[in-house]
Length: 79
Ligand code: SF4
View 1 (cartoon, rainbow, N blue to C red):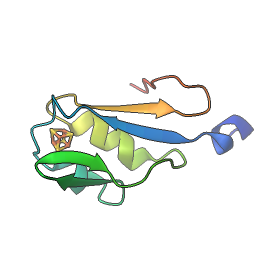
View 2: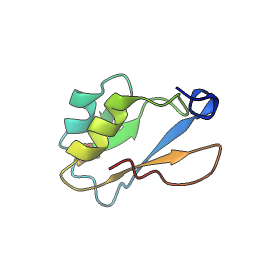
View 3: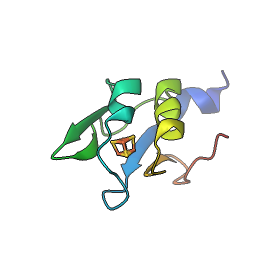
């Protein structure tokens, strides 16, 4: 892992309009997501890169999740 990757911090952005509350993200990465009032809610503000989060993003049937690198400010596309 490079120094840049070690310093990276991610933040999840969940689109409440698109989310259908399936709970898949919370099932894939329960340490990062919870479903509150039928909508996905990230349970941590910022965190180091986490493959489980990416699995959750890719599992969302509504494409309601994005991951932003809080250092660069960019939305990540790891596909
Ligand atoms: S997987 Fe997608 S649609 Fe389902 S709760 Fe999570 S964000 Fe919402």
